[in-house]
Length: 474
Image (cartoon, rainbow, N blue to C red; front, side):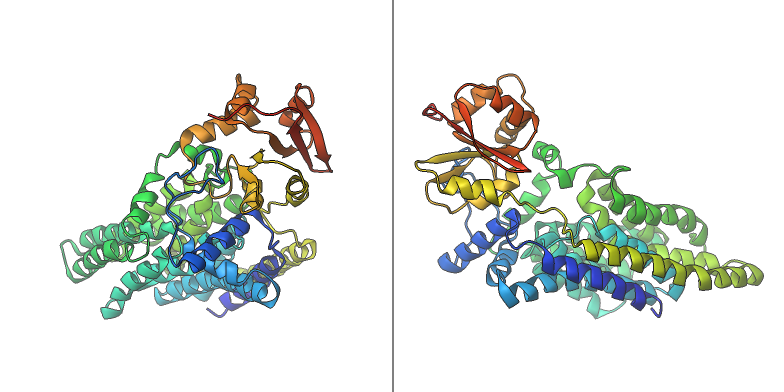
């Protein structure tokens, strides 16, 4: 861990600064605060959308982030915001630190831990933000660490799963991962031994644990429903990672390559009783990594202890002369690498450009001053979160995203993509207000469409309103 502390300190500076300067007016945070306020006011978690969602009024809703919403509401401004946003950043650092501790407990060398921690930290960059999924990263890291413990403390993994389920639906991973771990243990022990029985029991306990929340069985049912859900095609964080994803290219992909190269050469069935557990866990999270960009950081947190241990064991198998040469090389490469990472982080801090922000405040502020009922369509659905709770404003689609049925997403795609019949969708839904990106195809098409006028424009956004009463929505 002696080198890992330097890595953790560098990433802590980056994550803390990014979190604190993260716009409190971000669209997703806005609706989460409204959710938190509603839960505190009603002392109950809402289960349906309201009439403010005119495309899907009263649609069933599983607000998986309800506890995060309460925290976001309580930490909405001033010093409370610094504490809330800083706490999320510290959670990301804690996840990295727990994974490093996990690697050290497995016997990984300090140099191997530092190398893999650097890659894992870089893999977190793109997904990092003041988000519920980031807040549960340390719970994932702690869950994996506890599964490795030989003794009664391993059962604390079920308690972690219970806490996890109240913050985010990704807690559904807990029983699945524990069951996979139990299967790997059975193969490693060549029978249903002590560890296999313990992890199988933990898996069963986790099934009950992830239902210990106000949503009950609906939470895991909701999480399972996202596998194969067609609406994921319209959400950027569910896209498959590719060569344009920096966090994937410089963080997760190198870890995956190290797992392939050193995992196979450094750990064999003859030299390790972790072989099948490592293989099955890495295979599971590699599948998740390659299926959605949002899993880049998750894969890296889980892979760090396994890959660093494999790298260390491979080094131990080398002749003494080669190990001495590698040690001398590491003495130069690690400080140099840390220097360049520090420079990169300092540049990012200077730019202070928080990721994934939704800043369509100005056009939506202009909408709030307009008379009459406003049925709003936003080309980026997250923008419309800022219109929630505003009198006389209803939205076609907003950042809550999950409860809206597939036909609504198809209609959104038809409008933004100017597909045949897109104008008829506007008429059928009674949309009379549209926020779009300036110079976007939708902006240009509306500028040539009779019955619409430009009501607001700035460097980034345009606002169009109908010049005549819209047809009554279906």
